[in-house]
Length: 88
Image (cartoon, rainbow, N blue to C red):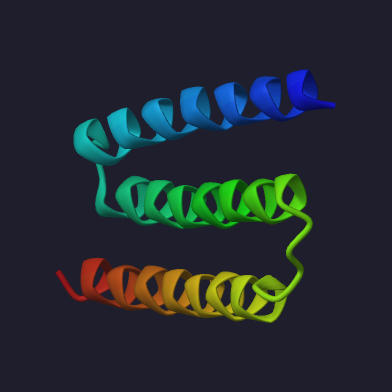
């Protein structure tokens, strides 16, 4: 089972590095917002893997709250950018 956790964490790390590249290089603000949302989801997934490794379910409500706040924040930021670009 440890090999599975190692593979999952390696895949999450690779995805996080690719997401950081998109966050830094993104040609538009909406690309950067989407990359930031994906990065937060990857952090939540890595924390969930950590909770699974140590059989500690006490952080699950916190992970759900962070994921929901990230979703609402990204949707709000994308809506504001859309309005700002429309008035430009």
